[in-house]
Image (cartoon, rainbow, N blue to C red; front, side):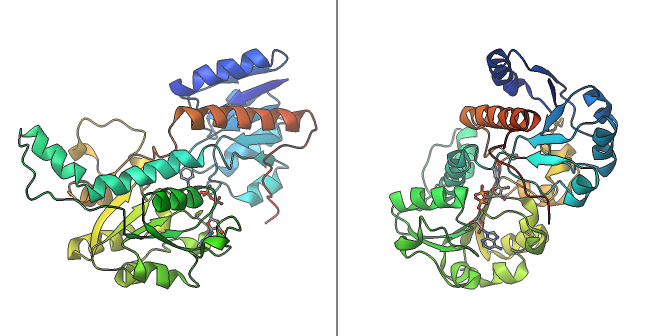
Length: 334
Ligand code: NAD
């Protein structure tokens, strides 16, 4: 039995070896390349494939899997917005994903974005680089006592909520399907607008469903408190970036922490000679601001998360190949 992995990074290789050692009956092979119509050929002769990428999974590439008699795909992450399920149905492909590899990784990163903005770390870093160690006027704010609004209280949002509560914040939340584990806390508001209007800090943790593209638009920013801080460590497409830039320009928004961007595929996971060489206009409009922190989709990036992504995806791919029920199947019927 052979499983082929796409998009393998250096930091994943140790965990891959570990899994390989524990499964002597399974042959594994990999490429650093992502899955495209050109690289699909590499999987020929394999039984299953495991992949992860932010670029869309192209129909022509998926068709080739069918041609090679491969029907089991496992992705090593949670986001499935790169797939057109119709393609999977057309080519008889089954899919698994890793919905929970470490919610704490993203929740802790979200917390660090909030703290770095409140304590004005980018400004202190600049001053420090100029050997300026004076405090004034770079005075910070505390999470304790602030109202933190969480949009989407699933695996990640619920952990963010608990961290914020432990730090003394008043947590309020909006979710189309409130989390039973949090319902007794009395945090839920009936509408998204209430959360937008009442929060000092707003952090979004919903999936990117088609209906939710630009959920946070000009109207949403207009409803926020003056000087609110906005965090997005979910998906770039949830936010109308031009509206975000306008809200920062007008001073309506007090700061933004962004681990994801609408145009991140052109920027993140790439090396440029300098920031000025990044041609993306939205990135350029955001990057040189003291009250904006951008991280290159690294919220998930911890040893715990990477281990779980490799192990859970390979375990599920193998289960499918053995005709057993995988732990995390994806319902591709809709
Ligand atoms: P989840 O499915 O566990 O939770 C999502 C929650 O959002 C659910 O409770 C759901 O009911 C709610 N929801 C859905 N649509 C909504 C809407 N329109 N309004 C309000 N609530 C809504 O998902 P999760 O694992 O917590 O992931 C949350 C987000 O984080 C996803 O977008 C995921 O892709 C992203 N993510 C980012 C990183 C990163 O490195 N930055 C890593 C993992 C996940």
